Each structure stands twice: as C-alpha cells, then as structure tokens.
Amino acid sequence: MLSTDSLLADFPILDQTIQGQRLVYLDNAATTQKPMAVLLASRHYYEAINSNIHRGTHRLARAATDAFEKARETVAAHLNAASSKEVIFTSGTTGGINLAADILALSGRIGPGDQVLVSTLEHHSNIVPWQMLCQRTGASLKVIPCQDDGALDQHGFNEMLDGPVKILALTWISNAFGTVNPVVEMTRSAREAGAIVLIDAAQAIAHLPVDVQVLGADFVAFSGHKIYAPTGIGVLWGRSSLLNELPPWQGGGEMIREVTFQHTTYNELPFKYEAGTPNIEGAIALAAAIDYVNGIGIDVIRVHENKLIHSASDALSSIKGLRLYGPEDRSGSLSLTIDGLHHYDIGTLLDNMGVAVRTGHHCCQPLMARFGTTGTVRASFALYNTLRDVESFVAAIEKSIMMLR
Ligand code: PLP
Image 1: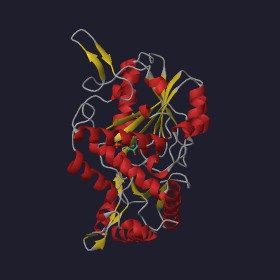
Image 2: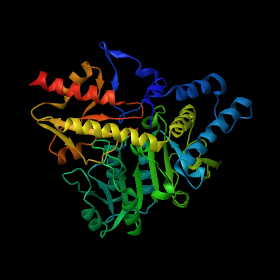
Image 3: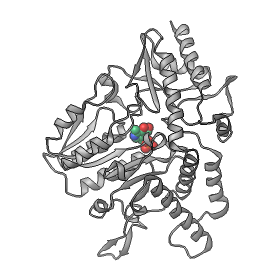
Image 4: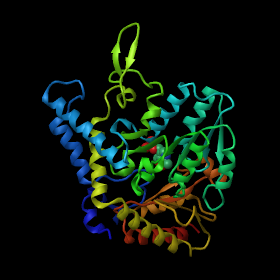
C-alpha cells in the first residue's frame, strides 16, 4: 500500500495553504506536481553540466550528451521499446501528434477517399492535427461514437473498419471522463484492417504501464509534465520500420548527415526527427521522473489512485442533482455537473476552499457537445493524493451546492 505521508514530503509545492486552507491539488490531468528528485535533476543539469549536446569535444558537452542519451535509454526501457532509436524527444503530446500527422501527410501514403478515425473522447490535440492532415491530403475524418456511459461504441468502431481506414488516432485514457479505452484490442483490429495506429498516452503514462510491444501501435505520444516531469518535454515513440520509411519533418541542425547547397542527406533515427537544440534539461528531468515513478511502482500507484477515485464517486453519487460522467472503472479523472449550477461557479468556490480542480471543456469540445454540456467540474488524481483530499473535495462540493442554491 502506498504511504502518501512520506511521499508528500517529496513534493514541496503541496505544503502550502490557500486562503488559510490546506491546498488540495486535484488538477493532475492538466499537469502534475514535481518531486524533489526531478527538481534536483533539473538543477544539477544547469549547475554542473549545462552545454549543448552531440557535437562538442569538451567535457561538459560530453557529460550533457551522455545524460541526454541515458535519458532516452530510460524512456525506452520504461516503454519496453525494441530500441532507444524509436524514442523521439518532442515538446509534448501535442508536438508528438503533430509530428506524426505531418510526416504521414508528407509521405504520400494518404489521399482522397482515405479515412482517418478519431474518437468522440479525443482531446483537441488528437483531433485538429488530423483535420489538418485531411485538409492537406483530401482524406476524410470519421468519428468513433461514444455511448451514454462514456465508453466508445465498439460495435460502431468495428463497422467503421470496413471502410478505407488509413489511420486510427485514439486516446488511451480520456482526460475529460477518465474512460479507459481497450486500446490493445482496438489497435489490433485497426492494424489488421491495414491502418496505422497512434495512441495518445498523455493521461495513461502516469496511471498505467505503457508497454509499446504489448500495445502493438505504430506511434505513442505523451508529455513529461503529466508524469511529474517539467513542461516542454515529451516523447513520440514510433515503430522504427515505419519511421525509417517516412520522410523527415523539420529541417535544421542534428537531423542531417551531409549538407551541400545542392543536396542534403538525413541522419538516422531518432536524430532525423530532432532538428535543432532539444530540451536537454527536460529530457534528463523526465528520466528522473520515470525513475521516481518506477521506484514506487506504477501498479502500486494505480491501486492507490483507483481507491481514491472510487471513494470519491461513491460519496458523490448520493448527492441529489449531481451527474457523474464516464464509466465506473474510470482512471485518473472524475467529471461531474450539478443541475442548475455552472461548473465555473463551483470551481471558483472550491478554489476559495483550497481545492484546485479544473472546470470547462477540458479541450474536448466535441465530447462536451455530445453530452449536451459546455463543461464539467473535473477532479483528477495523482500518487500524492489522499483519502483526506477526497473528503475535502466532497465536502467542498456539498458546501458549494448549499452556497449557490
Ligand atoms: N491528449 C490528452 C488526452 C491530454 O490530456 C492532453 C493534455 O491535457 C493532451 C493530449 C495535450 O498534452 P500537451 O498539452 O502536454 O501537449
């Protein structure tokens, strides 16, 4: 069982009060807090080895290069990637999905009449890049429907695979409802139908083991800041056999082998997709975050978070007029609305009581439209949350209802 008391000491930001109340941070799906191990890794980089990587002969450059490439190995091991060459450092999930969509658009593999499947549950980051790909290639975007319980319609999905589907872009865990999609099965079906599959693991990365070989997809994207690492760093894992066939993306330093004014040849993976100076400190801190999570154990974290989320949903389900979204076996996030009350007003009152939640559409406007709401109140959990946090959250919801009615 997770001992959150000792873990809390690892997260200095959580030791503060808001308007005299203990901070209860339940906005982890937006971004997680950083443990000392991550803060120290960033600091050590700048204090001891800051230098540009790969081309330097001096010691700092070698130390920074070693730390950066070791970080890539840590990510590759965490994802069970066949090779660290498949790990491309990006600015985040959005950066990774745009990279994948752009190189697929450039590849000439997608054209008029082809279909790209996304689901109703997607974050805008896993919709808009594919819409842009469709505009560029003449393909059309199709949407896997969502049932009333917040799960995807698997029957509808399987029927859609009879069409000329070239790409499936699917979230593993919904950031809005916490729905966990059966990604292994959906990936298998889509690949059998001849589609390239990208899994958006922005939320899954902090809550589930992400094993790319078990998953079987072609691309997996995630952001460091959702797994206790800094913002501005993320990963696009890509199957090397596919990446080797796809064209380069941004041009610049590092992604080249040889440049003349007449012709350029390109570097091998992963450098082919890492033009320019990367976020060196971010990659090193991401590795520290992954080590931190693995030191606790992702399965231990998952059991702990599930206990919290179940306890919250049990307590909230008895409140009159309160609607919970998503299936009961949700992960990470819990979304709700209350009849006659605006989500923003509830969020503001909760903030005054020291409880940080997110309100609004959570970058999922099509999903909100499907459920006939402009937004929800979302509480999202991390390894450092406690049953006491759940009690404070539920009590604050009850109090806001009394104040607003
Ligand atoms: N996809 C999902 C499911 C998300 O939850 C998020 C962020 O909330 C993103 C994509 C975009 O992540 P980022 O803003 O870190 O690129």
